[in-house]
Length: 118
Image (cartoon, rainbow, N blue to C red; front, side, top):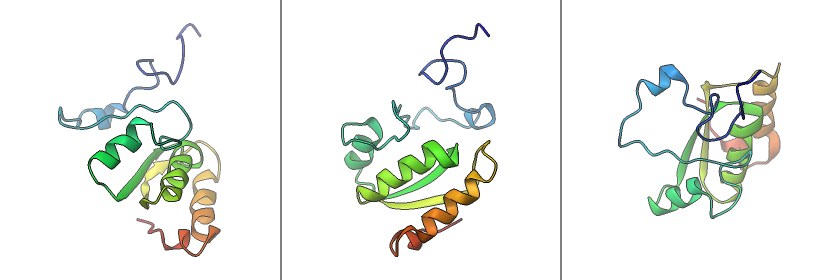
């Protein structure tokens, strides 16, 4: 529709959701990602930032729960971070996608089942 590339940094649909953007502070950290997961390799900006700041727990929110959020959560968990998926801060356009994602996380392993649902 003449809107150009999508989901690339600086493109029309890769910006922060406007109601959330109204609360962005200059001190907030922003880490771009170039794959479905923001933690797919140790050289990714999010990974490097979390390690540099000695963070061991990550709260996961966003869209699409069954795609980017889930991919990043699984990679973060596999890399050793404590992962919390925040239910009322997640969403997707895939019918049932959010519920299936939460279910799969809860039953995937004894350890993943320990993930808290908030």
